[in-house]
Length: 469
Image (cartoon, rainbow, N blue to C red):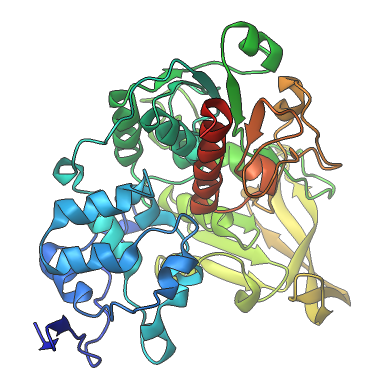
């Protein structure tokens, strides 16, 4: 290990450690994890590349401000337990974030090494540690303070808030509409990207900390905010997500075998439709599948369809690949697995076959015009340029709207015109001083780590509000 004046100096010529992936042709046939994660040897080699910057921009790029240089330095010293403890000071879900966070736009996007070469593989190092939970110290728990908090939703924002509050001595109950915990982590992200066992491990860890989970509990139907307060809760954190699908609003959208990505992925990810009839939930296994959208959800849907036997699995997007909002790694993995990308097309109509199910989709060819408010060039129709693409399954993955249960929860929370909860950006407190909110139900669909950041901020604000600290 090179030292100068007793301080570690990274080898600037060392290349980034390649990801440890399953062969594309083999993994595209089943739901095995695509990435096997770093071995100890790979993690140590990658940790040697960190510059240990005096001003670590990587920390600024992390929505929960993990002390990245410190945990990498601890990896270098083979203090893996200490490194995991460092992460857990700021993040409850390292095994999850290491797998699904868009590091290229966050910590790794700010890495100084990335200016002239490849950034340090921070996400892979975080996952390496997260997959070794047995090495972590027992979480330090504050004494019970006698206050009760209800958390609505067990997605990344809800469970982060719950974990932080439990550590601060609160009695926390998480109310989850589904029969299992994890929210979008289990119903939205496929097994090949995030194994369910990893999510369950994190939920189990929260239960070990004393967090109670009430499943099959739809707050708003089961109980309103006022009723929860009457039951003795001192505060509520709303983290219901933004799971209402956006419509394409084209003819034929209601035909059989035209799915919304939420429904399609929930059937396969959470209800094991890929194993029908061993499990009760069926779904159509199409041979020609077209997915409309360019985000991570679209990639998850089309890669799932490929694993369910699609001979032609197509991503159809109204802009080009360069404008796709998905992670570059997801696009790379999809193409390696045989997914076809059809750029600059927009759906016009889904066409029914003789049996009444979808058999084709008519698309309008587009070209890029001037930039819109997002800074991306606006797609403009090319007059008369219409194609028909055969498909026996079509999936819409163009985004989501606010979960309508936010309104049903009640209280004095203000909602904006789109149905999202209005909450303070720094604290998560809503216009009802007893209710906080965060994650996608406040911001709209975003990333796991941003939702976690909101949960962490809200937990700190709730603690201050209820304990006067």
